[in-house]
Image (cartoon, rainbow, N blue to C red; front, side, top):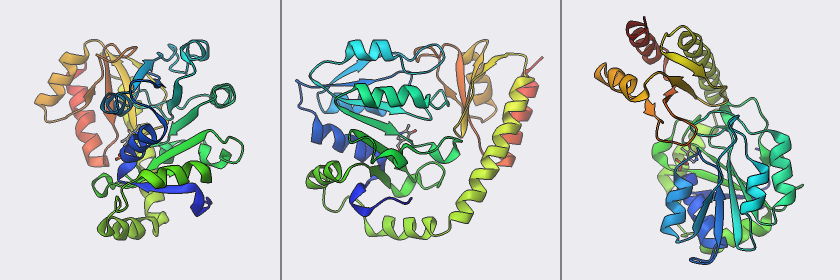
Length: 283
Ligand SMILES: *Cc1c(COP(=O)(O)O)cnc(C)c1O
């Protein structure tokens, strides 16, 4: 990644890294964090576990951070701002100018969760660590590297931040079997690149199909390995697909995501099954 060892910390999945950030930088019952729904659910779960107030500031209807509202929500006890880009479940990356402004105007730590960065056309924020001392980037082997089961996540930040987290992390959080598998996998970048390229190609195929389905009204731009789409009745379509043995994510209860389904791009064979099922339900 072209990043110095002193700027890297490994965790038991990036979820552990996120939890360590709460424990290192937030005082329970006193501090608060800001999250930007609709987004990854774990930030809220971890704020609950760590007894740290979660201030939710909705994305705009274009699924971008709302700078004015975020600024209003910040006070002297706001320690962390969680930015998920590409965002789960919307799929889009956030505007570089907006993220830059947040890094400049917020006095706390800005955590950019890049779980889906390997599918994105955008550059990682990790290359900007030297410019922003309050920047923390998290990445994972769970998505593009296809190794969710081994539990390995990365935290990329200033040497000062990494040193603090290193003081509180469990000493043996990344076990030997995980290390062996991870080294084997990252040593073959060509294999990873080939798989990512094939997922991106397949994503186009699924996108093109979704455009032809009668009950799909909006397909949102995506930089990830999934596609968010608005349908006529998300719960009905979710159930119909389930009956055909296909599980998608029904995101209808998430703010700004009424009647949306999130389709993860699978293998070519899996996607063909989904395409056939969608066509059978379309009229
Ligand atoms: C999957 C995911 C994670 C967690 O990944 P692990 O490394 O498996 O803990 C973090 N953030 C987002 C946005 C995710 O989708």
